[in-house]
Amino acid sequence: MRELLAVTKALSSSTRVRALMMLRNGELCLCQIIDVLGLAPSTVSKHLAVLSEAGLVEWRKEGRWRYYRLAGDDASPEVAAALGWSLESLAADPRILADVDLLNIVLEKNLEELCACYRT
Image (tube, rainbow, N blue to C red; front, side, top):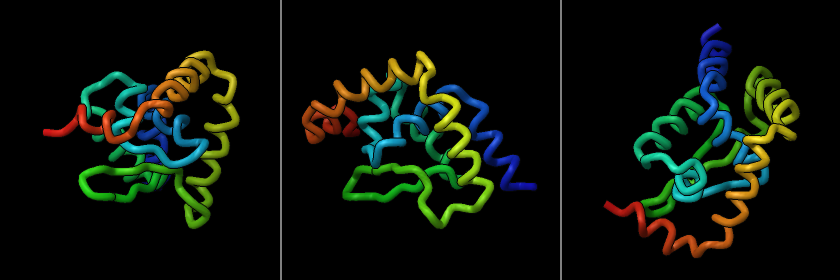
């Protein structure tokens, strides 16, 4: 039951769902997700931590930066089902489509320069 509750909690926030949907085409740097969402880095990190705790996303660290991707083939059946349902249900959502447009602009930016904005 814990896993189900973690997944439903993770999917209960539009910001977390938007971040999740951004990852459907592959791995993104935290800075890229921050830029699309337009929120404070700490806020976006917290949202991604909830998604990670639910098993919906995985991350890796490279230097100072974190890179996120959707859960892989080793995800539980419950997580895989939730991901499949979310991705299918929201593929044509206007907010998600607007995020796709923003993400395409962000992906054209130099990653080093983009990430430099978030150095502390």
